[in-house]
Amino acid sequence: MLLAGGSGFIGRHLAQKLIAENITPVVVDWVEPKIEGCEYRSADIRTLADLLPGLLEAVEAVYLLAWTTKPQSANDDPGYDLSSNVLAGVHLLDGMLKLTKRPRLIFVSTGGAVYGAVEQQPITEAVTPLPIGAYGLSKWTFEQYLMLYHRIHDLEYLIYRPGNPYGEYQDSTAGQGAVAVFLGKIARNETIQVWGDGNVVRDYLHISDLVEALYLGLEYRVKDQQRIFNVGSGKGESLAELIELLRAVCAKEIAVEYLPGRKVDVPKVILDYSKAQKYLGWSPKIFMRQGLAQTWAWVQTCE
Image (cartoon, rainbow, N blue to C red):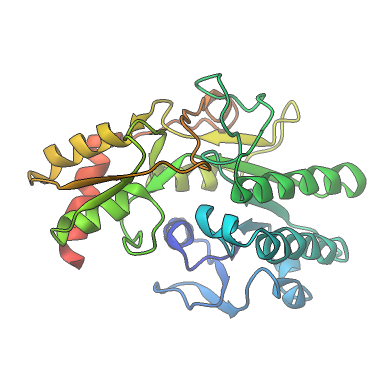
């Protein structure tokens, strides 16, 4: 299996899962992975197609985890977001068409940003995405290209739309992932900044549950044309509720500073994962309090 962007948070856990299942992952990233037992190639999504001959024909699936932007940085430079992700991704698809044996492409999209400010909660895969930020828009656009290449060229794909994953090895200084950022600040006795009034709701998902869903995609044979899967907990916590949970789990006082809300923050996202349950046999196993406790124990060993 090839993990494009496999040195990141999700990729590291997925690589460890594959190794535990006696599968040697090939990690393609600019950063060398911090785990043993995998092969490594230095490249990113923009140059991955150059490595295709002799590499992808030897793997059954490509997990596309690489994305050069984050929700906020994508809005700062939408042109870069488009060219370095969507156009680069299309270049990868074009390269895959030249292969004698084409692997399946498994794309890790986003459930937190792709749907936008929809009224239906929990959100099913049948809801038409209306992203309100560049990050969600570019992810959804690449999803459309996957569907296009399947219709025209029979390129096989799966799309995962995860909630907000959290857990061990997530960088607390990267500015993405409320759980990681908050726990890092708590460990350093710093003030937590919250954009808005704390009522923004997200569907938080422990990384081990997400990785299990991604792994199950390897053996999944498409039924009923179902190729898109929400992966979440099926419930949501507001930022205010998350902070209260963290107070209980960490047993520490937490200072909070409330900042003006942002126009690109979706008010509420709760994902319906019934399709993943039906077709993949997947459901979440680690819920918030347990997952936060595990992550907090790890954070304390790092700070």
